[in-house]
Image 1: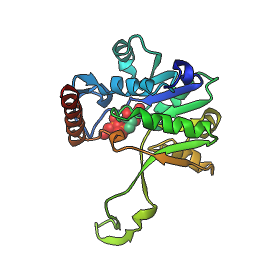
Image 2: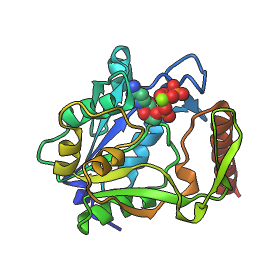
Image 3: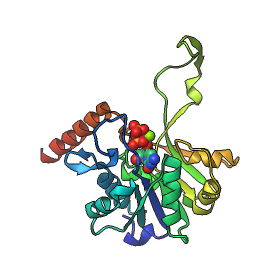
Image 4: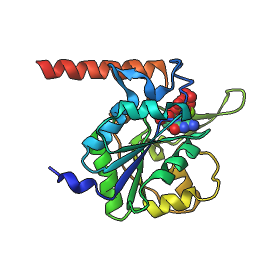
Length: 234
Ligand code: CTP
Ligand code: MG
């Protein structure tokens, strides 16, 4: 068991400012309830339950700042308004993060079931000296490259491929350097560090850290939570 103070120096930025077009719930995805608890609340509590995160900067649509803060009482969080794309939202969160933090995590609100062990593996790897760390899983499907007409061009060697999850962890100074200026929008933050030519290390991800993107994913997450609740009562 870690001491409660072990989150000192680690801040997490939680991008939750997307609209959730592919989920199609009619409200921003992070505010959609999962077994009655909004995804962004589950994601914040998952980070804090790791005992290695001291503060969370939650980034939400500009008209949801007060609403998000009301959902997160009695937690070490700051809520700020996001930007037009994920990269801009992370930059807004980073600007509000404690400038003295040594380690910054960036974690999608859309990964509400991420186990605390993944968070700890990422922080431990940064603490051990890596500038940037991402949790990954092997790719299990056969992967093919296709042309504009959908005709197969080639079969990709999947043994060298990894599917990437969050939280991604960074030495704070390196992430701030990667976000300096106006970087091209990317779907993750390690991509910005890669673009600088810096090495990005990997640790084991977890299937439970999957991203809720579509209605199917939301259903799977609900079934997983229902199964876990049943197991606790037997
Ligand atoms: N995100 C964000 N700001 C944006 C866009 C995305 O903070 N302008 C966040 C989302 O809230 C989510 C994470 O980045 O937690 C991953 O993005 P994604 O799964 O694509 O979520 P959405 O952009 O909300 O979904 P969609 O692309 O289907 O609209
Ligand atoms: Mg998106």
